[in-house]
Amino acid sequence: MTFLGPMLPILSARWALTDEQAGYLISAQFFSSMVGMFASGVLVERRGYRFTLISGAVLMALGMTLLTSGPWLLGLISVSTFGVGHGITTPAGNLRTAEINPQGSASALNLINAVWGIGAVSSPFLIAFAQRMHQTSVFLYGTASALLVLLIALAVVRFEPDTRALATPPRPGHSVWESRWLPLICVLFFIYVGTETSFGGWIASYARRLDSGQHSFWAMMPSFYWGALLAGRALAPFALNFSRETTVAKIGLCLALVGGLAIVAAHGMGLLITGSVLAGLGLASIFPISVSLLPGWFGESANRASGAVFASGNTGGAILPWFVGAVSTRTGSLRFGFVVPLLGVAAMLLFYMTNGFSNDEHPSV
Image (cartoon, rainbow, N blue to C red; front, side, top):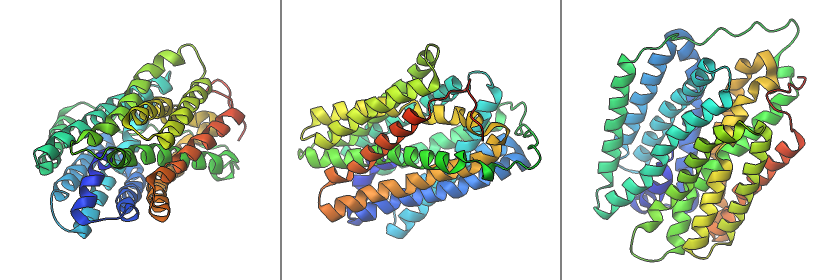
């Protein structure tokens, strides 16, 4: 979903949007993705992983194609279509990865999310190139074509097994909704996804305002952020060989906090690049580690809790980036808007500082 960040200035210019209105695009993408996440579990249970992942790829390709032209309303529809497709594939991909790697799930999830990061890093460069050629529609059609190729690959690859493993029956009288951890973990995922998306979604717009030149370097700024995120997820499995999950998370959030402060303080591209890299590197392992810790927080109820947890994350991805735009519009400065994800990093660091158990330590629910 990271293509929307570097595309946001282009779409804002096409439809003459304010920052608050542009934030609605991000909100539409994440709210629709939340719908897809709720549908994902049902599709996996009834039709298997293959059908679920193919359905998501079809919807994402359709959304990219619709975004090539048309009015503001069609833009919202296309972004929402893409969001539903992304929402369908994200839980299925993550849960299947964890399911087939029961030992070392944190490392496996970091690696699979690192592969996802390759697209996040490359898309800003592709968008910048297409924009210089005044052919941004080529990027959108090209991405749709790549998704169709993925669809074909999914149709022929083997899936064994092709259904989610049956959950362990709950203990009598125990419900995930009675867990004291559920509200807190939902808030954690709400803040994380909203924070990651706020940095990635607005950094190109922020760079464009700091760099008043006529070149398109600003469009490549998200690549520094997503590139650092990719590098961090690729390196995380090595760090996890020597440190507990929560230790890696705390170190990462300290880096992200320094990066966020650098972004807010930036008046030129140098400090902005530094802040973007630190923020991306610091946030890299938080989502995979948090997913891997779900069994530690919820025990045998982890599968039942995952729906609410993932949905909370997507809600954060819809609300916090919009809030960044709203703060920017009200204050007249996107710099103040970046205080929102900065506070999000601080809140997550506080959580991990006060909840320092790992997969080897299962808290009572």
